[in-house]
Image 1 (cartoon, one colour):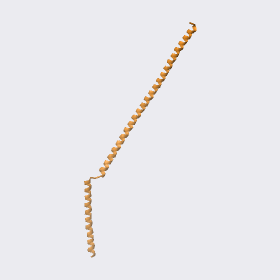
Image 2 (cartoon, one colour):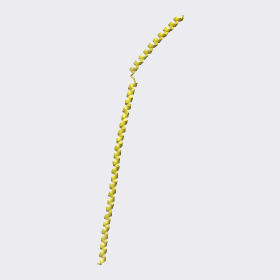
Image 3 (tube, one colour):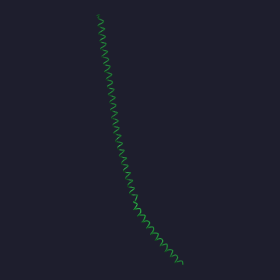
Length: 129
């Protein structure tokens, strides 16, 4: 076998080994880039989830506080209405009693007024006749 065939075979073998090594190296670089990209993506998703969780907790606290304020305002308004109703309205029996007293007072006053008018008329008629 001629010497150049050995060199060709060795050169071809070295080329194949180097090509295989290059392919393996290239695949390892692609795998490394994919791993870094995936880890960055996972980190971004975790950060977004954490931000969403914090935002959700803050919003829930805000809604809890607003609900408490609405409940407090409703309790105050109901108390105001109950107090106003208590102080403004009277029972029917009490109202009728007051009306009866007023009627009796008016009746007595008109009786007294009629008596005074009768006396005045009597004096005028006795004095002018």
